[in-house]
Image (cartoon, rainbow, N blue to C red; front, top):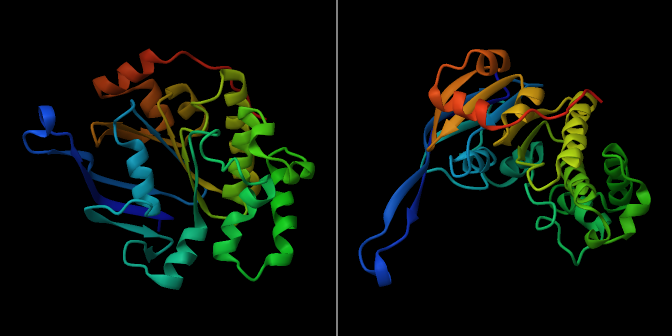
Length: 266
């Protein structure tokens, strides 16, 4: 049984009105009847251009957004039917790394508060362990425990993204949605973060949905790749199949549009 099994997910948003508010809003299907499975320990790469529905799909899987229809089963549990304690338990197993390392960290909070914040919700009785767990998470992502007392503005973009990764790790989840985690970083720093994610997957037995518009990054990280266009999957297969024998014209366009990156195993 896969760790995550999503079936026939649909999510629509109202889009715009006519000039000066005239006319009726139209409905745009950001995710249009998408099904996927992810095995434990696997990385599924989700690739497509901006606006293709990738981030919306990731948020539906975590129930950050509620789908219009469809099902999500995680580790044998129905995510969309879960309530109360059961939903909290599921959510601690499923975390997200956000795209923007500048906007996703509260500038008024010290790093210790940022990294340990999920524990306030999911482990409220663990007050005495919060600082220790935050320090352990920071060390796992390559930052010293001295960072605990500092504020986000004191760090570089790459370091801030490491803090965001530490926040996702502190609850020791099984599954992480990494939503374009290197797109806001320069190439060399992004390569370090990609290698860090690969290392953490081995150390913590993580399962990833890795969202990106960059085919070379997805090729390096993913076991399988799903190509998304206008809310639908146009092609899904092993990384080798997708990158060496693409069947869909859109996949071939993505492969041709992104240059190779210098990525090497950590």
